[in-house]
Length: 155
Image 1 (cartoon, rainbow, N blue to C red):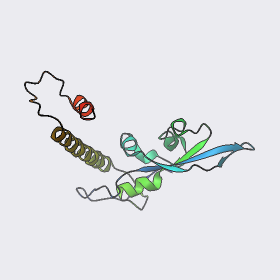
Image 2: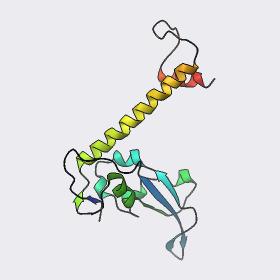
Image 3: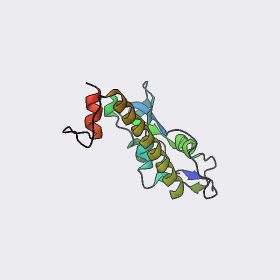
Image 4: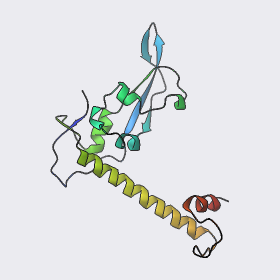
């Protein structure tokens, strides 16, 4: 089955939803059948999905989507399923499943995520520097790398 998209004119591809949420559905074996149990939750898998080479091959409740979630990290050791197709369609703003999600759509989404993350990191760094004592980065004997500044600001 897999994800498909409507054709979108070049230059007009834009992300419609803020993130791609996977619905984790825990299950238990009952009489040799995997049956849904309590504990359904949503997990942001946007970066993971955008790193995939073939997003259009994702199918709900199959290995392609189940591998997006670490069930043990969520405290579940039994069978489970993951649903994501609708969230991917919402993220890319596609409704009719007739053509594959294009590389252009994925590239624009990746760039959008990177740009947003970069802006947040710069804003965080500026906020940390405003709270920190004066440090002349060029003459400082201290490690002023991002990780060290972040750690020292929490002291």
